[in-house]
Structure formats: structure tokens, C-alpha cells
Image (cartoon, rainbow, N blue to C red):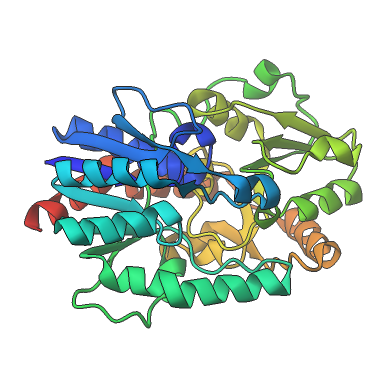
Length: 369
């Protein structure tokens, strides 16, 4: 088959959705399918081992102002997307609410090409009441109709599936968890702390993600202020600059992926992800595979019901970062996971989260279409 993947950005942008799309494209290629990938032309294009790029000329003013990754294809981009859809046998769209996703659905309908929609997130409880209302309206007017319109629907978390349980479809949606490359993300057999220059006796709290509001950066800042003796390692980039906090116990690292990111997981004491509006963040699954305990939002902690025993969920309220930070500190100080339980978590992640199995199921569904 010739498969066209549609996302808002390419993998180089660093977001979880883009990373998932990149890995699935590599798996599709390994399974013998021809792969195309349409996304905003602002990013570094994927290499030939991932997919043939279809870069879409876009405007990206919304992300520059608000931090929300929402590129808008222009007429040239829409024409290029239309040609790619007509050349393909099937279209795989990641998340419904992006303009490129909506355009792909409409164009694929016109070209009579089957669409498989992978829905990653549900509502985002912004601190702003206005943005909350806008998000709720967008989900009602756009996301839910997109979920109904797709020929096939995949949820990557039980949290997202529950959020859209009322959407009526002819067939039942699939629940397929993202995979983890356990050849990279695994428990360490070497001294990761020494290699990274971290002291053995310091408590290291790791955050991995974009530096934007929904990821809970305001909460992270408050927690770092409450516990100056802990080291907070923040891996990512974004509109928010943690260096402006002026905190000596906050260390920023950029450009981490693959083995270099896995080294951070192995060096840390726990992963802290105080984010909202997530499906099942890939970084949580990677941390589990490395044997790293996780503290995250309460909804994220129930994304995989069978993994909930190992994920410590905390109520995250972006509008009240001080109270949230206090709850996070309490959860960190109460965290007590023994070596045997960590090994069970690691083994579960390695056994359950499988990229090849996910790609094979998606390809099988599309072959049937």
C-alpha cells in the first residue's frame, strides 16, 4: 500500500504526536509499504528511511503567540496535500483538531480514499476560562464530527477513549497504545549519572516535553522553589524559558532523543509530568520501560488501566499552580516503589508497548478498507 500520514509538524518539532507519526512511518516502511508524510514545511524534513516528505507551506502565527502548535496550510499547501492524497491508497491522520487534519479528511472524502484517524488527546483544561470554552466548542463542532467521519478510528489511550465515548460510529474504535523501542529505552547497565555529570547523592527530578503552559511549567517552577535541594532536569524547548526563573537547581538540556534521552531516564530518580489534556504521553511509556517511577496528572495515570498501579496521579490545576505544586511535593516525598515493583513495571512496558504490533494492526485495518 501507499500510505499518506498527515500531522501538523514533522518529527524534528519534538512533540509527542510527531514522534509517534515518525516511528509508525518507519514501521510501515519496514513492513513493505510506501510511505508519504505531509506536514508543515517549517521543520527539518524526515529522512528517506522514515517517509517521502510532502512539505506544506503554512502560516504558524498561532504557535508563536500562544505556544499552541497550529500551522495553517495556505492554498499552495492544500493543493500539494490534495495531490498526495490522490496518489495514495489510504490516509493516516493524527489528531482531529489541526487544520491540516481537517483539510486531509475533506480532501480524502472527495477523492474517496479511506481515512484512519488516530486521536491522541481530548480536552485541554487551560488556566484561561476563555480558552477552555473555545476548546470545548472546537471539540463539539470539529473533533466529534471528525471522529464520526473517519473510516477507522484509533485511540492511543483509555483516557481519550472515555472522553469521546458518546461519539456514535458504525464500528467500535480501536485502543492501540503507542510503542516503545526497548533496544534503546531499558534499564541501565552502566553509571548514567557519572556520564552525565550528576552527583550520586542528589535527588534528580526529570521533566521531558515542550515548554508550554499545558505541560505544567508553572507547576514545575513552584515545585523547584519549594525544594531547592532537589535538582530539576528539564529536557525540551518552547515559548517558556525556565532560565528566567533564576533557579540554581534547574538544569536545561536540549536536543535529547533516542539513546541520549534514555540516558536521562536512567540517571533520574523519577519523571515528573504535571501536564493536562494528554492522551498517553510517550515519555511516560519510555520512562516505565527504563524502570523510572512516574508522577503525572490524574487523567494521564489512568490512560492504560493495567499500568495504573505504577503511575502516581496528582490532581493538576493550572489555574492554581501553588496548590498543585504542594500536592506534587507530597506525592514525590511519599513515593516508595521497591526494586521488585520497578522490575514488574519495566517488564510490563516492554511486553505491552510494541511499535511493530501497532503498525501491523493499522496496516491490516487499512488493507481491509
